Length: 105
Image (cartoon, rainbow, N blue to C red; front, side, top):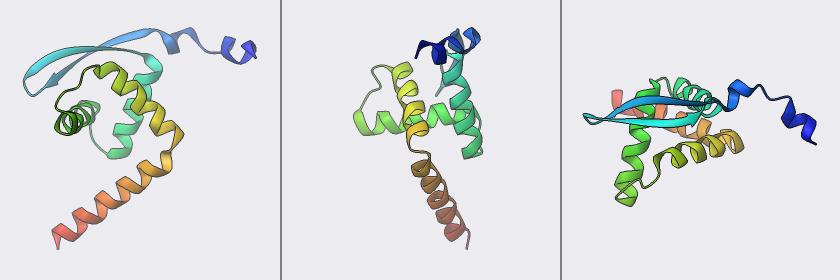
């Protein structure tokens, strides 16, 4: 079993810090590169920048829960949820595009 994990490139689990501006406030988020790559991928599927995706996610959670106590953990779990159920993400994108089309008419 360990052979599978030993094959992982060490650069994939190196920590990378990115600076993000959330409504004028600068914050730094440290995640493993694999998580950043997944977040970049999700943002690309949404056709928005990574910064905008992360800000939108933060705002949605803050609106729902009143605060975001551990933002880095939220981002990691978001990646896991996306990888487990990409079909839900595709359905959300399709619904959002349909709403935009309806509103444009």
